[in-house]
Image (tube, rainbow, N blue to C red):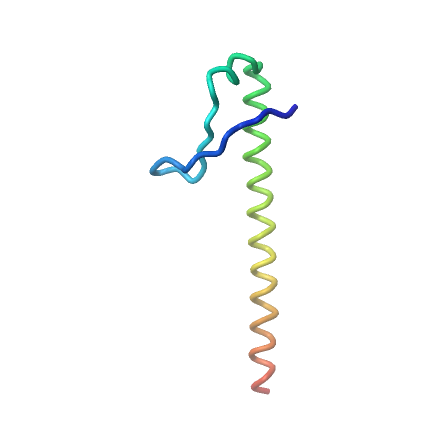
Length: 71
């Protein structure tokens, strides 16, 4: 289920904002819209977790290389 949702500059106090037009909300089934938002948030969470793991792995590699140059 794919709909066009416009991104917006986040409102103060928020990291992500969406712009849904009146036409979009009237044409979408409410439960489908809620499902889409939940799926989006879960995917963002997975992506952030994956990025953190990659950064930690990269940091360990850099640290090992840095320390190995002293031994």
